[in-house]
Length: 111
Length: 110
Image 1 (tube, rainbow over the protein chains, first blue to last red):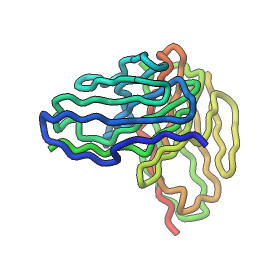
Image 2 (cartoon, rainbow over the protein chains, first blue to last red):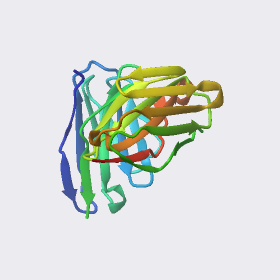
Image 3 (cartoon, rainbow over the protein chains, first blue to last red):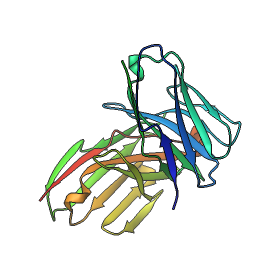
């Protein structure tokens, strides 16, 4: 069974704080993705990666950095978090880019 | 770029009724994926259907590639089918990204 885990599951921070969201997949997939989901906008792609050390810019990258340290691990970094980054964040992995396996999500609140 | 329209935006059924969800997209898609998001937020892939008709359990998807549309039929709905159904076309020309619709919110009442 494909497995994607995310941590933390919930995070509250203040404006200007630094936040790191972690994602690990045990599927041996090459592709990994970070999305945010907001009411009225659906899923929006922040960053993605084709493999360790690779990083691709998504559709809403401003204010976010990402790093793919290994095949398994993909991190999303928010430096100087802002209230507009309050959202539900999903990580996903895929072998082909099409059938994506999602983590449980991280709910981030920036006060 | 690719745009995805899903209809209806929301649907309320009585248990046992059938549901028909529509997805229209603006550009060519080499693949099309249907996802389910539970009321608790978890996202799972339902099926992949780039063209033609595919069945899995009580779900039937029909995609007409030339007309850039896909449908998802849920037969004999159950309360556990409640949630949001998302359509996501894929084109290798789009840098291997899925393009997401806003979804159809389905509520099945007992």
